[in-house]
Amino acid sequence: MNRPDVNQRVLRILAPLLVGAAFLALWEAACAALAIRPYILPPPSAIAESLWTDGPSLLWSLLVTLRVTLAALAAAVVVGGAMALLFSLSRIVEVSLFPYAVILQVTPIVSIAPLIIIWVRNPFAALLVCAWIVAFFPIVSNTTLGLNSADRNLLALFRLYGASPGQTLWYLRLPTALPYFLAGLRISGGLALVGAVVAEFVAGTGGTESGLAFRILESGYLLMMPRLFAALFLLSITGIAIYLILDGISRLLLRRWHESVATADDE
Amino acid sequence: MQSVGKRFATGVEALDRVDLAARRGEFVSLLGPSGCGKSTLLRIVAGLAEPTAGHCRLALDGGDGRKVAAGRIGFVFQDPTLMPWSTVTGNVLLPFRIAGRNGAAERERVAAAVAAVGLAGFERAYPHQLSGGMRMRVSIARALVTEPDLLLLDEPFAALDEITRLDLNDDLLRLWERYRPTILFVTHSVFESVYLSTRIAVMTPRPGRIVAELPVDLPSPRRRAVRTAPEYAAMCEKVSAVLAAAMGGRAPA
Image (cartoon, rainbow over all chains, first blue to last red; front, side, top):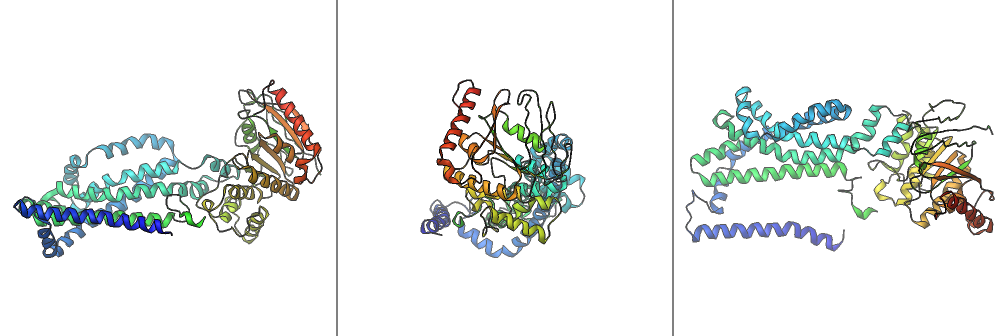
């Protein structure tokens, strides 16, 4: 790795941090200078304080939300992957079912969440279903695309050597689909969190009454703005962490061969 | 050497009543401009496409009819067509893997094929780490690893630079002398076809048909010196003339 690369990396990390710090300083100064009431907009210092004092209980709530998120993501991977596989094996199944996957995707989750919460008695399961509906589509559509993207000449070659459909799937279609699937997974990770939070919001007191979204709602009712912001901050951090972890997994799996991550310096 | 024949005759737009026979061990070039159905013809021979009229018969290793045992035919596309997630060894091993054979003997043959195309030491490299010419060598190694009776090459060197192409021309000749498969080589380069083949079939487009078959009488084994020999130049001129006449006076592409 040469110098310009190192400078680039430092810049990529340092520049956004500086912008963030400047923004926080401005926010703090504005709150003091304009005497903004803390229940309208708390200064960053108050939020940090709340993060410290309410931290343990907020973290506990975060764990509840995270449990729904990760379970939904896992279900999205399993069901989404299986559906994509089914779609790639049968064109009939794909054209008959894909529109319904799209319908599920485009229907705003807030509008069907109340129904799901009524139908599914178990609060955890209800939240899980909501988050899953939001999260599974990118995996289905991306993986289906990937499974159908195998190189035409390679497919011809597999035919020439008398490969069975199973062999073509295992040696050709699945490896081809992997980068597509991982791209879908990265999107789904963020969406699962969004889905879990939205579902908790809609469920309100009908939900598990302990997730991070519920705490935000509750803080709002109680005008405990610093705590609301602290919870928001935790949610953002969680979203970023999920993305970074999935991105790391993706890089790890593709680093040997895929153009998006393969390093140029070993040529 | 047993004499075997391949014949096909196809109708409709792409190919029109094409007749071609090749004896075992021959190196036949299909020469013609783009879009004259050379590739289609090759795909029919490989069994990857069905002729709409007439039939294509392959007699390989005593087999008859259209069904040919897997591995008796090798195919090299214009692109290297490698699996980017597999190493050189993994790519060359593919025909055996599909056949469900993955033992020490197969590994040995893979290593030999990789060495034969001059890639010893690159067994564990991934395609993206190789140059265009090296990728094409991997593709050729994969086609040869089963020691096929028939090797089909579809403009394999068209996308390579001149220097690499000349190198690969020589290597292909060397491999042909060593493994002696029957070769059907599609190209649009007069010089390449004369240098490589024992016989040239000149094709014209719309509809694709073979208008002339020219035997190439140049010393064998051929080495690079042939390229500057007067006989080579004369042959190139002759083939060019036939091609130009077939194209109705237009300059060969």
